Amino acid sequence: MEFIRSHKRLLAISGLIVVLLLGTLLLLKHADNNASAILEAKITADDGSGTSFATIYDNGKVEKSRSSQNKQFVKPIEVDPQVFVEHTDKKNNIYLTVNEKALRKNKQVSSDENWVKLTKLIAKRSKHAIAMLSLFKLGDDYYVFLKYNAGLSDDGSLYQYKSSLTKVAKLDSGKISGLKKK
Figure 1 (cartoon, rainbow, N blue to C red):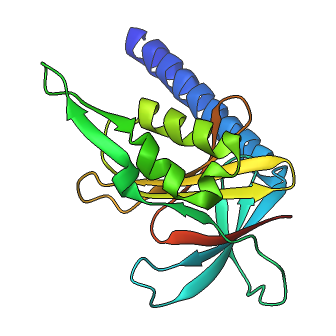
Figure 2: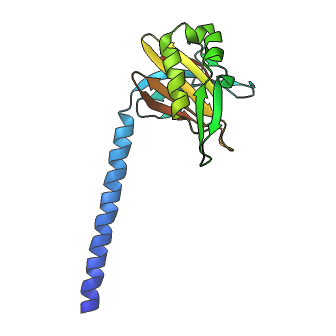
Figure 3: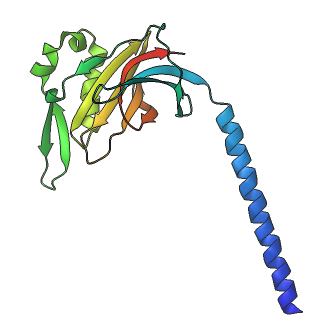
């Protein structure tokens, strides 16, 4: 008798867990459907072999989209990774600084003080060597595409800069060669 009672209790608890999991999945799927497209990106393979297009949503999701050849994309301002000077502290932690003289040689970057601030902020936050830094200005909004030279990973992250950096999305591979608002 005790065995049957404990078995029923176990079934009831298991059923409740399944219902909660299904409810959570439905809620997450519904939340995903409410995402708004905020940006469109032109993505080029790292080796330059091909171009694709993606829509970036406000929840960080990135979806491939159809070609947008007729749309005007803002091209990036490329920051030479050589402007970042790599250092190690006594505990072998890596940190970066910016070679101001080298940075000021890039007239596109030095023409906007926000680009200079942003480049210094990237260096301050970074714990790995930078492989790629691309800067975009869309209207009054600043965006950064950043790839680290760290291990086997080929991913890069897109950030929006206002007074601080906010991660917008992550790309598994390639680089953003054009960006526009949706």
